[in-house]
Length: 636
Image (cartoon, rainbow, N blue to C red; front, side, top):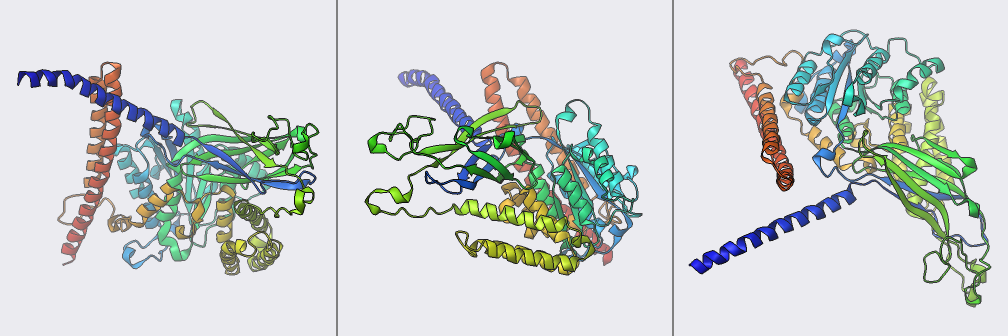
């Protein structure tokens, strides 16, 4: 027995050492994996993998892909945001809204807007801040709020502001937008280092005398350049031209829900929130440098709504990508001029006819043999607006400069190179975007939409005929046929919003609600957008059915506000998280204890978040049943 006790005493420190060593190694491996997964990546794909030596390419396309990490690995790595929700409370918001049968209690557009606004309050993280700017024929300050931290108290105040919204008066978009800019410009201290966004929801045309004159554009362009504006139009009566302009000039997005899908306002907002709440990188820029020694030149870059500048006669180019959401990928097409190349004079007789660009050893055992560098690729970004700039030198663009098939030995004819299907797909989409955007910016779309539909149909048929022999032939066009057909039909029905939203989505390569969130471009949906959209589809009926007349009113016999239970639980869980963090700060003395406390804290916070979400959901369900029970009792 004594021997066993002594052996146990000897083994315990070794076991503890092994345990903590394994734990530390696991943490280091996870940190290494997390670091690799939390970096922005840039890759390139040339249209052809090789160019014969004696041939030149006046328009050689290279696909540039900028990819954000799939998700924020650590909660503290997430970028906190400030959102100003600009909400239309004009008289038209009292109009009845056609909604699905299960949401019949919600009868007005204002009710739908309140549902969407409360969903936003619920989905923003604790570190985020939200301000509500209500407007009709002027900003309604008594119905608005300053920037509120999304703590339990902040959410309660934001919910109260939403509950108090009442619809009356006209629609003054520009004064409301200017008020939102003042809120973000007025931030002090560290608040100015936070990302700021404006989300604008409206159902009508501006009645404040705002016109898109050049003078007026210049006045507001400076404000638009500071904060992305994401606009959402409700129904058919809103002005898509103004909303698209605000989105384009600020590098935001324009979405809309049509009259048939007016009940999906929360879903349309969910797509936007899924991106804003998962910012993975900011100030992202890509710099390309052509291989001037070999005569390579950058002619232009198709970048949609992202700014790019080609300088020094095509020697270099910079693309401003800006903010990247987690799981997001952007694609750009770079057009190069590649001159013909001559075989290297230094090649041996056995290697006669091969190319050497002088970058590396022209040896058959090195990858530089027969290859020519076209572009050097570098990029930079920040994890956070106040963090240091991360600069990366990516792998350059190389193509094989093989001998012409006519000089190959044995009379063997090399196969004709096949263009990359992926590159072709993005070339076609970006070129079609240019065609549709030309129709959007033309006068016909505002003066004669039926005629604009005919013009778009004609341009599409010409476009399809021009590209029918591109690799996959008409199969390459099949995915776009339905989208263009939908835009043409919408224009013929007198509705231009579908075309505007399609252009906005493809220019920024981001998902938007195109008449309905269900019609968002699938390849632009990030994992977070899908998740938040799915949650919006499952909104409890008690939230969708809350109206201005019944909100914050105690039901007969209940004695309990329907939101009081949820708010109380939010406050309790917030206190639990704060107490956990303060307790661990007090107990952690040395460095080792601090490390273990940090590991425990991260795991504990994740567990608390899961439990909190479950508890809040059950509380919401219980409150819903309780309200229906008392409502039924009062009716009986």
